[in-house]
Image (cartoon, rainbow, N blue to C red; front, top):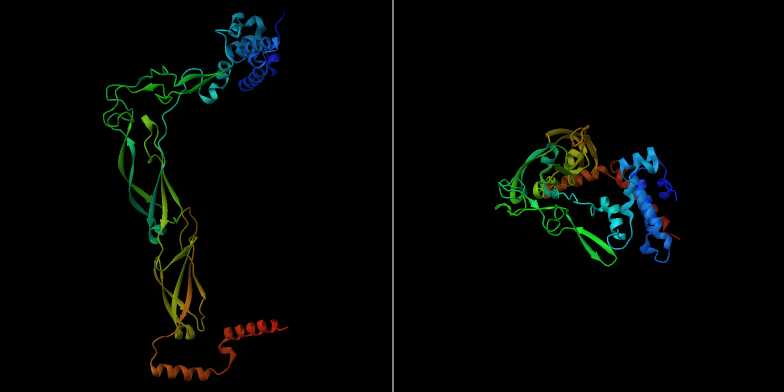
Length: 378
């Protein structure tokens, strides 16, 4: 009987990719495998037919020959691997081990497991507001793993090298039969590398890295704030057996400042003003991170008034115009008055009389209180 077209058997087009062919075979094999269809005598034939088609179409050279010459272009013996399912024949788990091997690294020879990359580290740095605004360089001491200098990270004693793992024979995987399935696991002896170190380095004991305190200079750019993080590539823990190191992340925390409060790129501060300066006006000296500046206080200034000093804030860490400094005025009531000073204030109060224009905020507040109580009447 003439053989069916391999593409038709798997239900794929002639332009199907390798991944599409693999998915199609997996679907057909799951459906017709004899172990899942013990009462269907045709299932074994259909499965063998699908296995033969997959063996040809999954091999680029065999597929090219089949596309050009049909069944005559491929070796008839290529299908021999699809023989019976008795002793020596492929088991259900063996077939699917080949299909899933490239996904899980569990079949088809050595797993290719790589030594693990070093762990990332975090280091908390506390800065003053001035250091955060203008930038600085800090020295940090990081206890970490570094590459062993004696073996240069190989883990083997100088002059020797790794050998093939005797447990998995270099495959990186070991097979375990559990009932119906053959399970493949990472080799417990070599950790999937396929190699072991018979003569370990005396300093790192075969790890390829040693524990050490590392001193680094971390450059803090201007404008950073609490919560910002600076990445130092390759300054984390050394990887296992020469694998790449991790990174070091410097976490920024800015200490509270006795004068300034930061909000984004702006700085805020409160400045006390004497009663007479607030009433008559005058000049006030205000601190900034760049030094002192003169601020003109207009007459009749009230507590809570905010003055803006443009460009006296923080320059953004990612560039752009600097923020502003906002100065909130707090009018200070005189204390520890002498008898004469109290007399003068009482005389001054008499000169004010009950003229509302001298106390505009008080009049407005009293009007609101009056309206509030009127609304409460029933």
